[in-house]
Length: 322
Image 1 (cartoon, rainbow, N blue to C red):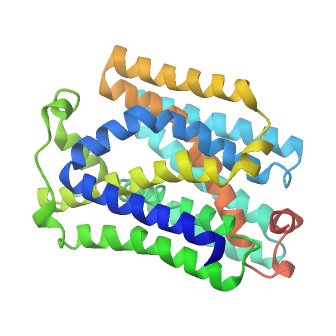
Image 2 (cartoon, one colour):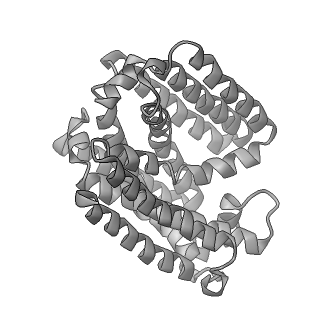
């Protein structure tokens, strides 16, 4: 595996440690990881993702992306006051971003063939909104695998395959063991007092469980979410900061200005937790998190499109292949 062996072993070790921790304390991991490092992970993810595409998109397109991300953050703010309206606006906006990303990344008839499923998924999702949010909640935590695959670009095909395969071990193996009940003897279903003083544990379970799930299944989904979220943070807070320095350096906001922005954003979210309680803090974090989620979405689509033949993709995708 060459130079990829060390990073792969690090991620496997982190996954083993966090899986054990999550099984023993799923409520605590789900609650406190997002409170402590959630805001910082958003800014670091945006820095890496933005740096990855900064040379591929024009400055005007870059500013357009900033405006779109700001609009999606606004829909999160609307959701805090009017969830029925805000959730639908965010769904439509997110699907529109996916459609535009496909349109910009493809050429010819492939554009129409790709956008048609997006339209169908949008219609189904509007009819089954709870299921859409359930799938989005969990899917967001596994999207970094696309960036891990992209990060190996330029390595030998066998090394890339081995690296991605090693990451699929923890990405699929641990959740499968939890969801199938194999880890139930180790799964602690009692929320500690530090969590119950902040939030009703049933709310945490409901936020990650499928609609209509019973308590046992709900606990498994909470543990799965907590584990994948923790690994999501490891990737953006550690992995891509150590092995993705080249991309991070290309982000337009650099040096002390970036860290001042990151500290300021984190402080505002922490102040929301301190001043308004858990629900207010999570709402503030949700607004900030929109910048990560909806930048990640189109860029992940573009990176996947680099696997297609050059004749099917646009010049934008060609620049990302370089």
